Length: 86
Length: 236
Image (cartoon, rainbow over all chains, first blue to last red; front, side, top):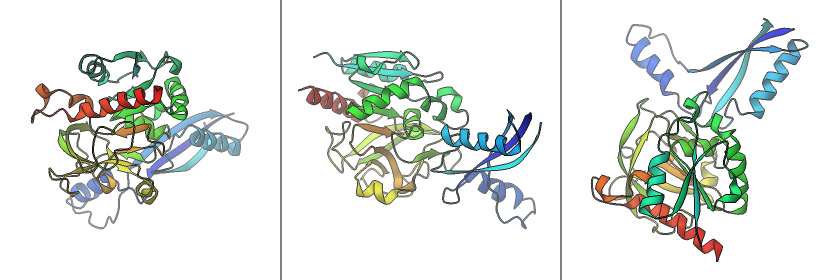
């Protein structure tokens, strides 16, 4: 069965994110959205994958992201947002 | 002995010919440009990973190149003590391949920074700094968008003397104004524990001839000279 797995890569909190800071400071706050307290940017991957079931699809994606350093554990975190039938 | 150095060429390397020129024509060393899929470590005494945008910097600068066969070959050189120099994108590749600790993030300014800077030598016991003295201040240019050094092991790096260069002012003082990219602790270059692998964001190959240096200095050449001296001493 074909699954779709959505993955987000983000910088860890200890690593400053000037992209998110600039969106908040130079765009949102200047245009009146001062209720926004923080913005963090990241990368988004949508992966289509053949797997036995949802858990298997998630396992494979986690394994390959770790093994091949799709995310850099020194600076980033990896979050699987969603797994659904493709 | 005839010293052989490989300059590895990845798709979208763009400082490869500059490094090759300095080795061949300034140092009179037998250096070759080697395509990353063709590189065989047994033929070389040392290797340079040049600057550029290997594999378009896709995903993250250096990560795709870090999985190249050239890096598997270079890992053998790393273990047997031969010198490995990563310049700019080469430094990014070496951190992604885990030859060196830390990572290079997007510049704090979000701008590509291209200018001459001052570096203070922090460690002259590496394969690339034996011709320099600790606390020397050298002139060298940078040209990068992703050079903000980050590590979660800063104390270990300091304790192990792995910080080789820091960005400073002309007098060698570590200041915020002299930090061009927001690097942690003004770090511009780090080495492995053994000192045979160095990564730095600045470009020594662009600072090796007086004619292209605003102050007429050739400080970058000392890094290549050190590498060659190291190879000669190893072979004795």
